[in-house]
Length: 496
Image (cartoon, rainbow, N blue to C red; front, side, top):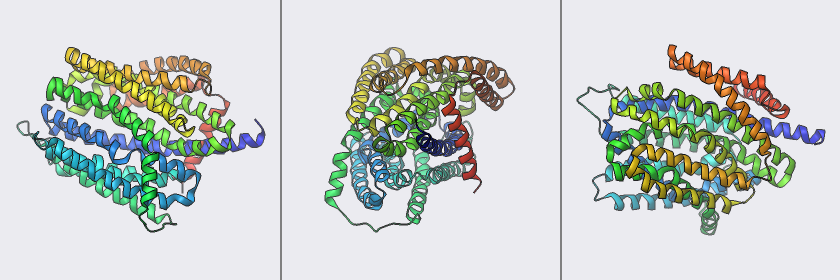
């Protein structure tokens, strides 16, 4: 690689590193707020109501696929390549998601109107489907322009709004033991907070300048719908293997078993979403480099996979080790919910697989290998549903957890095959061996630290892991430079 190419790659990787750092910092803050929010909700709802609350959320989340068709990814890809089309694409996409989300809410009503849970599902849909869908075009504009600092800030504001709304609405946050709140009221409170968060995204996106006012373009709208079809198929298939398990669990085992799984799923969601944020940060750069710099494209892909696994592996080990104190803190120590500990330890295995899949998905999309992603998720969805139909009636929540691991492993196998010519998997084997050694040291330190306090265990384990990895020389020269450049860029951004 020439000196000029190295400098160009250093700039690109540093920019990606800064973007990842900003989004990760926001996600960590959001995770902390989310845990407090979930603690209030789960302590305010009885075990059965928790199952109803989560089942309604999962049912509504299915319709996000049809409300957006994955349009955000299309917008980011095209705006990153040609910024001049930004607002034309945004307004067209807004008209598309408005129509689609309205149709989805109508379908949800007719599907649930005779079930007794219509109000619960519609309020869940108000923010899971409608608000989220309307936010996508404006968020895509900011992401395509690589304004990750603003995206991080706005997501932090939205998280704070939800926490504040839940805290203020459930007074006292922990009700007397003879009273439980209606899960409908929880969804109402979160819906109002999410609407305010949507308005913040709209205002910030429009104040960036260059806005052109909306003009309905039917042909462009139909074109977007057509181009989104592969993304929508991939989202639908991934929802099947990632979300349908709760629906099947609720159907076969009832609200009590769903209530046992609910805190595990809600705890895992923000951790898994970090993988999505990583993909969000690198996708605009991948779209540009895939057409202009093949060598830089390959280097960013390899570095991204390695760093994502370096982050995900200790998260999985730490979550398995500290599952009991984390769930005790989240649920208030209800005896029934302690069954969730073993389930969480199993589900923690998903983290490295999910992070690998999240990065691999972005590579394949940027290279226009959409069909490969769809096939991988389709097979995983079939495996998930097929195995769950057998495992859930037989083994309940534990069977569901192991099926989730298998389904994510299927996707990882597909993506590794798809990327076999682009990533040095020999390097990944060495990386995983060194990471296993570092996680072993981290396990011991976190175990004794957690005996003092949960936060002490988490902090001490994280520091130990970083020190051991640095001592083992796990990061190569380019990755060390990336970390240094990203830290400098992040410090400069935050110091403005």
